[in-house]
Length: 353
Image 1 (cartoon, rainbow, N blue to C red):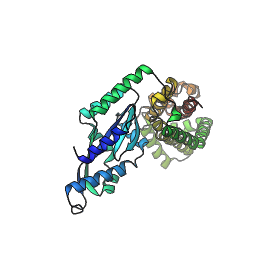
Image 2: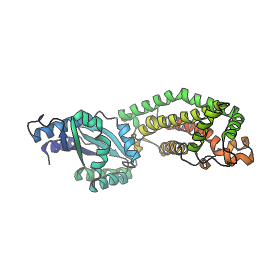
Image 3: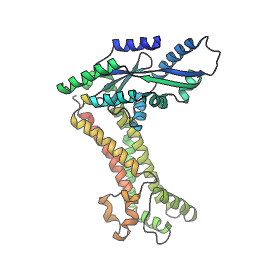
Image 4: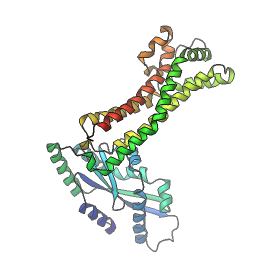
């Protein structure tokens, strides 16, 4: 083992906390931009490790968690902080999540995973290298100690007061601020839904007029947008309703993306041991609302999958096959965005004052 890496491992072990292990990230190989900048390969390696530590410690762990989440990895793993340079301290809520991470280590999948997330153009530029290969490892003794602690915790069933974790309190303040920033847009979205409802008959009329004759179904938003773009160039009358419809859907997309990045993902860094069962369910519901509505708004998703039953009476029965999915996206989008806002209110109030 490299002496520098061995020292970092010993440093983390000395300050290791319960249910915690270190994810040890170091430089396996690097090709500097200037081959003559270092007196020896050993000096280059030491400097690269130090620079790597400086750079990874600047990374936003919420965004890192988001990248891991999108790859379906590190579920239930709390990213605490980068400690002693490039060592990522992580904790776990249950034994299964620890074992999953250990299996990644045993399967030699940790290094490529962290390579994909951290060894980007910004990192190469900061380290002044043309090529960078990372090595990521776990240590068996930490795994075994953490495993034993998690088994004991499961028997005790003790809840941790979130107020004893300053980082988590900061995250809660952060998501509350993000919610506050969403406030005016949420009102704008509700106003847009009301306006769309008021002008629904005009919207349906202009869409019907713009569609090819004898069409009885709109497959997806991509097909709708393409058809409407052509129609706007040839028959612009009434198209303001179509443009407003499309801009409302874009507002829903923007708000969902904001909610995922600034509300849901930060909450994933708050340990389940700080939460009630209800709060854990609320986080799950937040994710469900964001994922489902984001999927429905994809250009290629079938419009048959969208149906807001409360609006069925607004469309003639013979035209529901054609229009119901299309118009449902607006009230469904408003509903899901509003749900996330309300779920967050309930989640936060679930903590003791």
